[in-house]
Image (tube, rainbow, N blue to C red; front, side, top):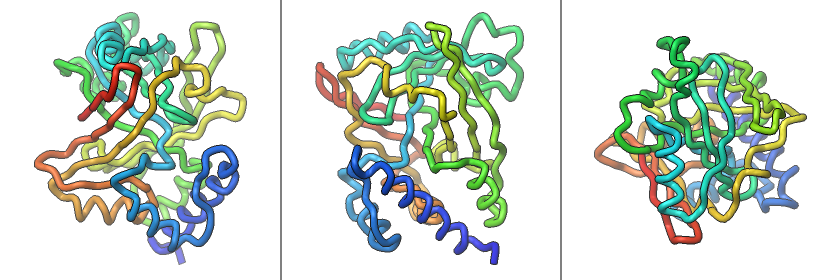
Length: 260
């Protein structure tokens, strides 16, 4: 049957399959779905989600965002490029194997084409008085298969949507994304699948920092835990007075804490 139970089983299998392929490099858990899920939530306070691809630090001005991070970590993010048609530009910083920080800001050269659906408007980047976490990305495997499973489970999403960015060296990075219609005020991730011929940004972004902890806070923590459980998103959910993302990054200058 096309039920949420079917979707849950599929997501568990997808994550385990990805993990088993990566176990030699990153030590991802393999084994029975129930035991892995149990370990995820038992480990909560000490872990970074294994499906986490990158976290996005939004800011109104890219150079200010780069300086903000460098002053706190001692590492300067490198300019990544622009997102054609989406109104944004970014700078990147590696956070360890297959994880990175994306500092994202409006691209002044695209100001004339920014509509209500642009990333600038959707993430409210111009309104930010200081850098803050605005969303995060997870890598579930093939996003086209995930889209079908989400639809069958009654979970509305848009995509897969192709995206691209040209690096300063001229190389084109390509990916596909899937976005939940209801992302719980940005607490739930969007899903990304990188093109097979695109180098993951964590590989050649400036190194020296590591993501030590990532979690979400919500006044409706129990409801959110049910949602992340359905999708097998291994992120810790804490009760908080407001909905926000939280991260702790270790750098040469010490720990930097970010929030949304």
